Image 1 (cartoon, helix red, strand yellow):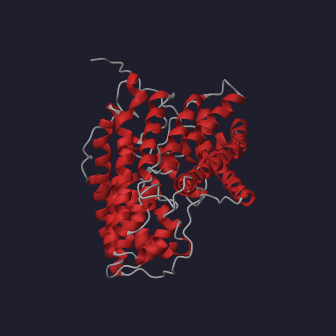
Image 2 (tube, rainbow, N blue to C red):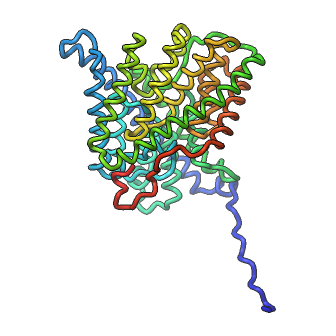
Length: 453
């Protein structure tokens, strides 16, 4: 027997958050985060303005310029095929993978290299402006992080990786600061998605919150100066809601159980199709664009509504859906959910963008459909639907509660208990479902990475 056992390994003490905050280096990082928040926010505002202008021009102004009396019914087909081709070329021919594949879920972390940023921007523009069903939040986070990292490296080339990571995170905060209607909501999204926690949470979060606050001011100032809008999601003129009922809690339970099944189907479609895209990207991506356009045209033909209800992220269409969707027939709402979900799953498999806004749109449509049935009113149904669907797709329960309630403004306090019930049920059911079929490609060989994302 060994009489002198090995001594225990020395314990490394965790850093003291207060000592870090008091340090001169941390104050410099805060100052730099605040300064970087301004140009990154201007770039993010310009990117969103360009996407908005391209959508309007390509789907409204261009058909008139070519002599059509409005966009013909077949108009989405060439634009979505072009979208697929441009995204495929960007992923295969430009440095990097043009951002991460949204079929892998909402991700943060991993700062794009400066030479990767053109690919991220081009693929996002081709996705968002030409009609694929994804949102701008993921590209904005990647672009903001990449610009933040580039800025600090231009200032000091030998900056330590920890400082680059903090400033890159602040750039992401600034870029997405008001897109979701509140800089605080954007901060929670990034915090929960990245898994930040523990005693050092405040240390890592403060630079990002500072950049987000400055970014929000920049967005408001640019809105006032340009008149283009804030590009923040807002739902005005909601009817008043005051008291949840037992029937509404039962509906929250039901929607919380149904949403994970719908989300599972969307993810399964994306993961089944994605390996085919990986093998034949230049051919399959335009074909998927044509399929998305076909879903939009089918919906428009059957319901008489606009193809834009199926195309795009749903950010712009969500307020009008909530305002007018209550008058839609139940069958039209169910067809909207089906077509939007299929288009969403196909977009996740091949295009580049974020998963948040389509999940919100589908959840709102699911809630509006439920409000047609006894015992549920429109406002709580929308909140419950958005919260449950976001929890099922994003797997971020805290962010999902905030997404559903912050958008409902004055009704948020009364709706929140119902949303929490739906989100908790959806999160638990999602965790108990089997993995969606299909092959994830995050573990492909390094030499294949450029085309696998």
